[in-house]
Length: 217
Image 1 (cartoon, rainbow, N blue to C red):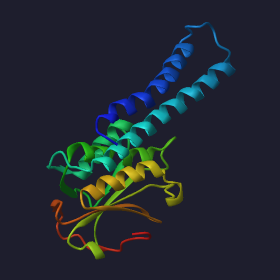
Image 2 (cartoon, one colour):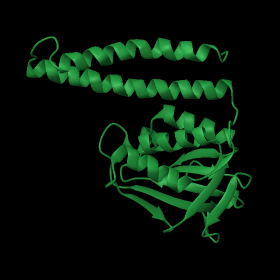
Image 3 (cartoon, helix red, strand yellow):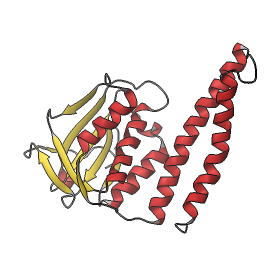
């Protein structure tokens, strides 16, 4: 798709959704008169579904743009743990628990600021899903056996099920990691992001033990 078509595509997809969400909010605010409890509950469901769809549209647009024009716009360094911590806090609040192993680990990689930020946001969205998370988010940094010169970041949580992970965010994460010469893999124990040595800037502690690659790697 030509680059000039992206604004139009975004407009065509978002405009009807904005109309649905805007009018739903007006109705819930009482602009058209009082509502019964049943009508309010139905409108609340419509609003929640519309907001969810708007998020899915944004992910789809990002994925289409990335597949059409796979380029890295910047080459900056970021600690992936801190990116995830910031996204986790922004979505779930300051009291949300994120456990990291080993304690104090740093996983600094080089990549595009916007795309790495999108990875962090998509991962937190996968964790949060449509309801309260099933336990704290667990992060573990590994040196997987068949990627010994690079590193892997394992994400898991209490009710993690590989067959229930949303496909669209995974597709976006996979495309972004592919752009950075990495890969994503779903296994029984969680979701792994593999980062090659060419993108790895700093890993502390450096002497991480080799870990098994997990199912589906």
